[in-house]
Length: 341
Image 1 (tube, rainbow, N blue to C red):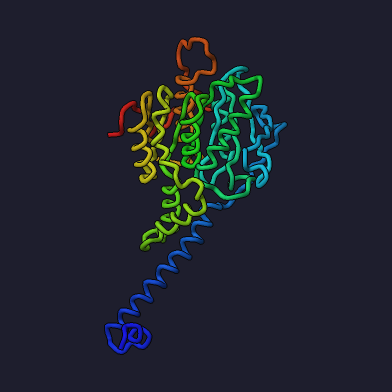
Image 2: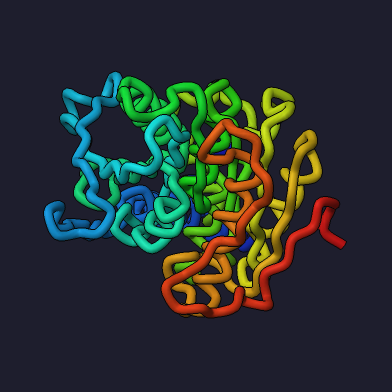
């Protein structure tokens, strides 16, 4: 009797057990792949919320600015961002919101920067706010940051050679990726940055509670890689840190987000000077209580005042940012120039 006959009509107990195990493994692999595919779809297409403000009554006199992202206009059309004018000829700070957030959630940080004479620009990434589509966790979002900078640099009321970038997770990766190839970026604040977009896919899967199942995370990451096949040869963003020589960078790490904090610290240690590090108790700026949010804003504004002053004239002193309510900075925010102990 041939082995094929035994497989077709098993007569021995060990053949039956082996076939049962093989069937279970195939079923488990297919089920895992199917679940991972659904999870990946949910992760790269987050629920969107619109961010609308009354441009005529909103403080800060914002302008609505349209810009086009090369290669994406046919799919998503022109983009719209809000430009908040500061001192004429001052640098512009571009704020890059995080995953599952939008430009409308950054308006208090906008006001804090504009109060100190900075021009500020905010916009929604793909798959966030009013923009449809799918996120790539920073691959094409960096191109969106470049398109925004190109558009603002053409204005006659800004310094076209001096930009600052602030970003949180998704926005931090996109900001870092763009800064490594754009000499106009003169200062960076990176909050909870990661090294590779696949790391955010892993975090997204783990938040669903099924990340512990065998091969679930890897299956989701493989699906994500297939969806973004054109970026398959892109190295981790930390491989380009050498291009940030002489660009001041402030890294912010949150104790309640240990996975991203560990990755952020690793990137911090690889970054050339000048670099700074701030450790905070709670992450995600938009969800911070008011006292911690004011302390966070003070830390960010102080960094830009020191590293990218609004005027090119000599600065006599760095004035700490203030708020309308004279609240002290949150004591949980601390900064240091060396690696985290």
